[in-house]
Image (cartoon, rainbow, N blue to C red; front, side, top):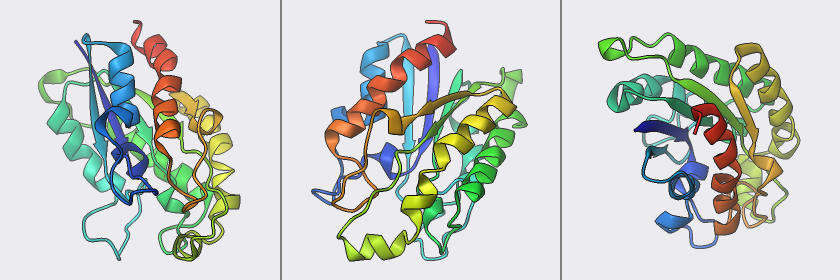
Length: 212
């Protein structure tokens, strides 16, 4: 059986801007991907609201630094055949990082962590698929607009920067913005249909990378 680790933030966790809760299990993109790939693949969802690529959020109630928590999860879920990294939206907060170029550096740090991890029992290093989040959009939600000030412009640069990084590091790449759009309810998150769309869009890419 093939195993995939989906490492992300609230877009992977399934946060709903409409209900301020969580999308139904079957609507979250890792669940959609699991259903599409079938029982021969184990899709592991590791999403955390507010997670960054590699930056501290000193206002957080838990460790949201993706670079600090990734090694533990690699060890927890080993062996792995593929690691999907869908992060960067929370880096757009000025209090965290605020620039797309920072996210690209953070993503590069995550790639190094996967490739240089001390895998137990000499397990093979998994392939890596970088996924750029859909760009932020304008919102009338004053709290989120302030929290992500400047994020609409910066997040629009992520896909290009991540694509270049994927080429340099010989990783897979998928632009989630090609199939999904953020909701103007808060400018950051996805409704159920757009969350499902990411799972559907990833299926052919994942099949190709895993040789399915």
